[in-house]
Image 1 (cartoon, rainbow, N blue to C red):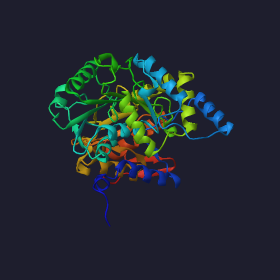
Image 2 (tube, helix red, strand yellow):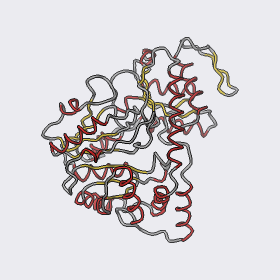
Image 3 (cartoon, helix red, strand yellow):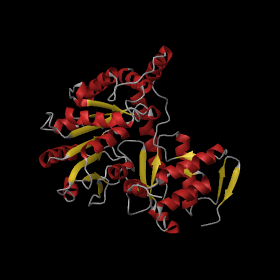
Image 4 (spheres, rainbow, N blue to C red):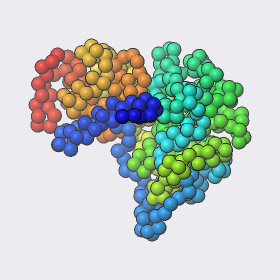
Length: 411
């Protein structure tokens, strides 16, 4: 049987496999705690629900323009003006079925086969596969100082004549690291000088902690003309807890957006009109839901940090934003040959805690797990307690999960 080279190059996601197993176990009544999730548990804003319901009640559910309905474009334009101090026109905006599609369509519009796309590591799991789907070559950059904060010189060292674009995700999934304003300024200037596309994946840009403020990449761009190669991607999924609605967008020069629209028109056409209406409601409605979510996530992060500090030898950087903590359990990794996937499967099997192994995000050292803080406080405290019971020989020998008594016999 014959398949395409690109199709055969795309790897199965261990993340999705673990999630699938966790879902099957939960359906069987198992007491699963999911610390691997990438979506807030709070409800979507009421303004979004009412806007979608109003359209549904009208019965007028029709096709939309491939780049989004005018009302959503106007809402995105207002959002861009408020948070980026940048006035754009409708022709600079494309709405997609999630920020993921916006990034995918942007890559398809700019990347030729064998051209390179650079992104700092650890990275969101889809970046390499998306680049490969375009026939391009993904180039992860590992900060030389071993931190989660890249420097411009780290990126400069891997740029070649084949480099076409750089992707920056800050705050970062999976680490929660928010890159410094100096670094953002440097990377914007560098891409302009080298005539490279810069894709700013800003999907978490308002979910930041400790008094930090969102960084505006446009502030450092010298070229804001229609020749600009700066692409800003955002969406409603994370900050409005609307992951299932699948609405994201990209801001770029008019010619690029036109090409992206042409591509998207042949892929999916426009996003669902119902979820576009919901996104309009969220963007134009009361904004308190975003701040409430941000405060909840900051509190959850603090609890996660406190619980992880109870381990001997677990290393992590306190997240600046997002709803993830990227922790190195290498001190307990010998039993798993320092393979975080084996550790993740063992935790799911023994104590029904779902996590995401760090090698999915490009980590080649340590034994990292991505732990989510977007569940309840109970999920975080009990989940970390279960993990500690499996890994830490100093933990009590017995553990109760509900009424089930577990006795440790492997340490």
